[in-house]
Length: 172
Image (cartoon, rainbow, N blue to C red):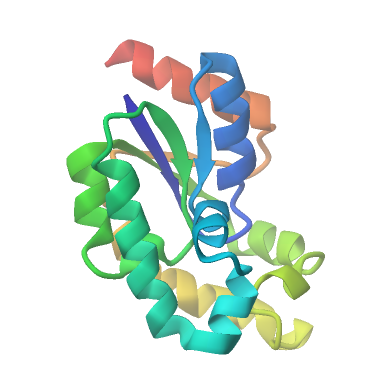
């Protein structure tokens, strides 16, 4: 069993995956943390020193490495992961995927407090952030919408989201 959580940054992928991991007793892997441990650099440092193209290449390589393993796990990936290098097709081949769908306003409010940790938005002014999110979501939605399941996360607790995911799996 492999579950992969996709969605825009700050949609709750890591916290939902980590919580579900605890409930099901299955290992949670955060792809960004996995990349950082393998590369011995933070994502921000990789972006700064080698650029986004390099990052997307290694991201796809590490995703393939994880998904093709025989391990059971719950994987949370970066917001752009499904949009590059046929990664979404790879995810669909090896795992059950969940799109955690958050509203532009929800994402904006969450990102305001963590911009410094997010290389793609760290240099965008708060005034321009909402428009950036809207444009980015529009570009990425075709990939996100390929997920096996879409979970709307707006105004839901992590516990409610995890329960919804478990109920979806029981009903299948």
